[in-house]
Length: 348
Image (cartoon, rainbow, N blue to C red; front, side):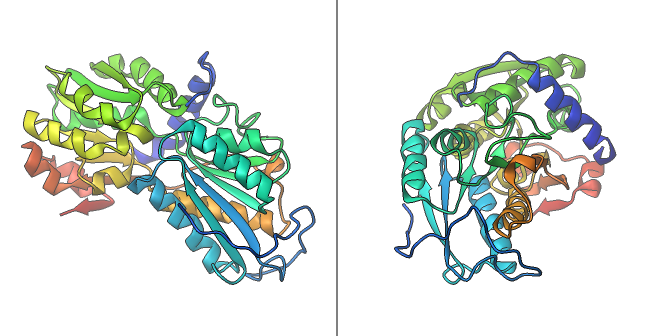
């Protein structure tokens, strides 16, 4: 399964670019002066690019375990590679609390503060940052399709001042997990925020893929996290829930898990953190590692070794199979032994 991922990923990204979609979708600060980002001094090894303390603004669309893990991975990588927090670098972390207008205000604040770099976590905050500044280096992570979202010109040649990592997930393999757990499954419930470009891309791909697997998607669209529970309860006659990497739904994952437990059906997730927090299984992304991968790109920019315009957007290098045995007990399902044997991480 893992050997086929690169081919599948390229197919998914190619398919998503063909869709006629439009992009939609408190912290501490330092008073020290920002370093000038245009011409950082070249260095080698793990030494920072400048003796001056730099400032990085981090904008996150909403706080939930997956996105929090991406942020931690980013900061950890910089800490380990010459940019220790509180010494060579300070962070201004801001959460938009799921609101696009707030994300826009945060991006404009960072541009006005002339921070040395912006890390945008998730599609809406990346869109806002890209619109707010055309010169500050912007790294994004947890963005499903940055081309469809109009954040970059192309995956290989982003152009401008923005690049980062995509969390495009192997949707076909994830939906196939429904069949592996329950070969007789026919209908899968999926809830998504119709205002998140990343979610719309995934749903369109899932709708195209599901019939190949003998599955029918039963969709419910929401606009905020408070609607997720009602949407989940409104779906009947399904054999499983599928939760893609939708920030609105993942932030309210507990409500989906509760409904699924009452229905005695499994929840298949779009990424590993959701499995660690109660979903049954996924083959997909580890957001902490995705954040570290983004941090690696950021260090190259800070050291003057690369420019965002010339750095291809990267996808997750190593996908993993996550299985939650406790969740299986709650949902009343049996995990196939083959799945357990192949799992990269089993949550007991």
